[in-house]
Image (cartoon, rainbow, N blue to C red; front, side, top):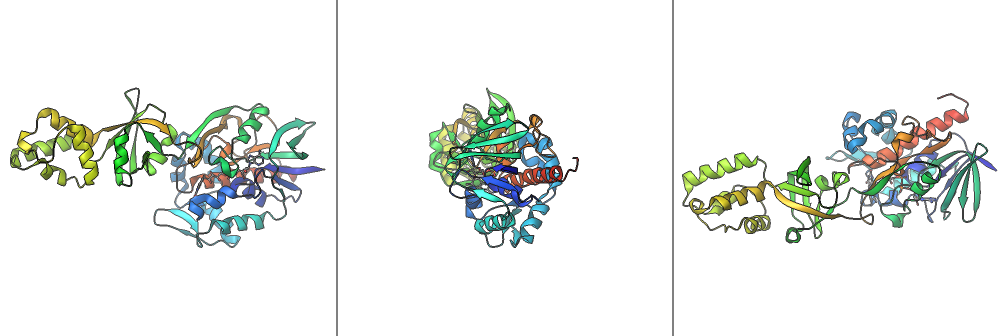
Length: 407
Ligand SMILES: Cc1cc2nc3c(=O)[nH]c(=O)nc-3n(C[C@H](O)[C@H](O)[C@H](O)COP(=O)(O)OP(=O)(O)OC[C@H]3O[C@@H](n4cnc5c(N)ncnc54)[C@H](O)[C@@H]3O)c2cc1C
């Protein structure tokens, strides 16, 4: 038997694609016992399925892939995704921070809606695909238990993060078998292990609106702004997770714990020395409204005690204080690995894909959707949105092809 479409991978993207296929002659092949395992875990089981707001803001949330994601996201937007789920019985709501969830806060409801919408698609589980080949204009898909043939093939196998949920990078191997370039994958949306172990004493402390300057080989690489969280291994929080796509082992993050520039802070300090030189350093530090444990760390780095009179602080101590408050240097020992990284950075090269249809430029009828592609979004629903938008584009293109409409 020859299927119109075979989808490899029953994750968010594969299921959304099947839900939009018009043909009933389609097959999903899934390696795990059940489909949608990662979707169930998404948003801590609540499924942050997209983000509210204008699409123009969305494009900024995919690192340097802004240009590449635009056609798919503008063809099938956040509102289209919300409309799809609401018309399939999942009411959605937008949280204060813009994240969109099902009203029930149950990822299971999202998965059930998807399964209902793709009820006409046959689903095979516990069948890891081991190889694919192009044969006489058709695709042959190999599993340990047998092979399947189709006119169109979709590779929606996800990336490498949380491998216990099925995504172990199989899609990259399949793509390479078919001659595609795969941009080296690495963990994304992940925390960093820092070389500076004294930071672990700050574990649990969260700081709002930190400015972080990213240095590589001593030179300024980028700067980021956002909320920071100290953890038992080093650093996390949105400003770290969303920018981890840029980080490499050995890079330095210079963290500013204050909201003013170093020059302004130093000028304030000197003014205080002139007006209140007899007061202790604590008088100045209290104005910064920083957690005590953090101040203790900064003081030990600057080799100065908070009881010292402002007028008695040496130039070297003042400089050390300013540097550690405004540019606290933290070297990255490592990124937290795939076991905990929420996405994969890298994947099948976008240069080999028609970004309106997700069809490969190498083989007609072969599509890639979702995280297997070289796209990673910020936290906040941007990765599921990509999984859904890219799937919708591929489904549309396949529907048109099967109907004989030229795209
Ligand atoms: C813990 C966690 C929470 C997350 N929360 C959110 C969130 O709230 N919002 C958000 O936007 N993003 C979230 N993400 C990211 C988001 O879940 C993924 O980007 C998204 O699921 C990718 O969809 P996908 O279909 O491309 O891949 P996946 O969902 O990973 O699905 C791929 C499927 O392919 C199957 N497969 C793999 N290899 C084979 C093979 N050889 N043969 C057959 N089948 C195969 C896998 O078993 C899997 O079912 C989260 C990720 C994690 C890990």
